[in-house]
Length: 178
Image 1 (cartoon, rainbow, N blue to C red):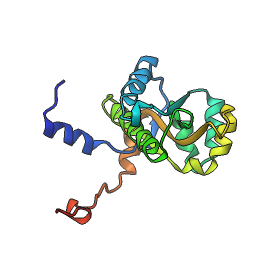
Image 2 (cartoon, rainbow, N blue to C red):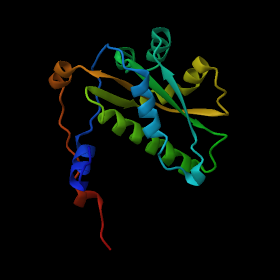
Image 3 (cartoon, one colour):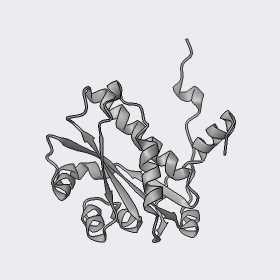
Image 4 (cartoon, rainbow, N blue to C red):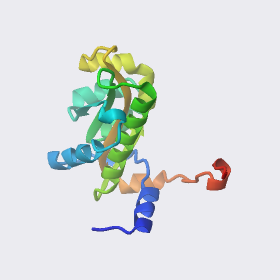
């Protein structure tokens, strides 16, 4: 399906964080397609400073869930992408952080492009990043947790019930023209 530029902008605006999932298997091919889209994010010097742990196993999901107030979302999601900054691949902290943000946004847009799938970026878990590193046996001097993207089949009824305002600041509120 080919989108016009206006359709593409609308597609971006329609993406939203989803926190309610129906537990149902998602194929490895779909998961790989999402990672494939994410890896095309820009990064300074093409360093691609990301490391992703794909968590489906219930025990690992429970261990992650215990480290955040959003544990219910992590456990409900079919898959959780635990995203780290690979400090050895990076070369400039600011640019590396921007690259990780672009990687995660590509991932969220790729999820949005899949019928029936939704996802949410959980950043609050970074408050316990050392403990997350321990789960994966990653040394903190080599890998820094950037967040978790929880993904699953959207529970439409529960999402509709918790529908919130998606208001955004007006463009004029945060831009200056010179």
